[in-house]
Image (cartoon, rainbow, N blue to C red; front, side, top):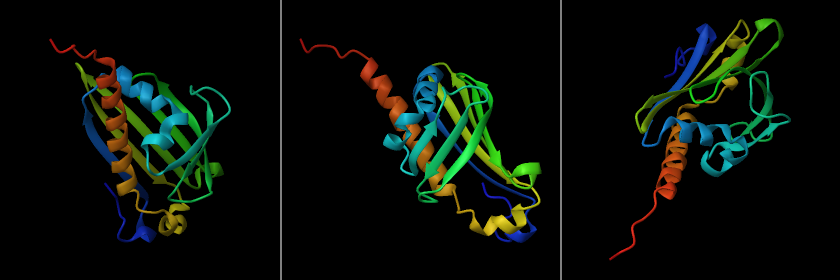
Length: 164
C-alpha cells in the first residue's frame, strides 16, 4: 500500500506493505527471517546486511539494497519479540525523517501469516519523498522469497519414504 504517492509534497506519511501466507510453522519462518547473513540468497533486492552484534533489541544494523546501490541505511532494532514481531527504525535526528519497518508473524498451526510494513514520516518527508523509490515490487519479492525459503526448509525436514 502506498499512501499519498501521487503527490509526495503533500504527504505526511508514506507507507508500503506486503502480506503472504507461508506453509511453514512460525518458528521456521522466524529462523529464516532472523538469519540476516542469508537474506541476499532469497531477497533479490538485498545486497547485504552488516550487524556487529547478534540480532536483538537495540542491535544496530546497516542494510544495503539494490534500490539504492552502494548506500547503507543505519537502523536499530527497536522491538524484538522472537517468533512474532520485529521493528527496525532509522532516520534523521530530532524526528525530522523516520523510517520504521515492522515484520509480523502470526502462527496458524503449521502455517504462518507474514506481514511487513514500512512507514516513512517526519517534517522532512515532503523534501525526501521523491527520492524514495516505489518499494512495492521489493516488498512483494521479499515476502515471496521468505515464503520460498521457509517452505523449502519444511520440505527438507520431512523425511521421504523409501519406495517399496
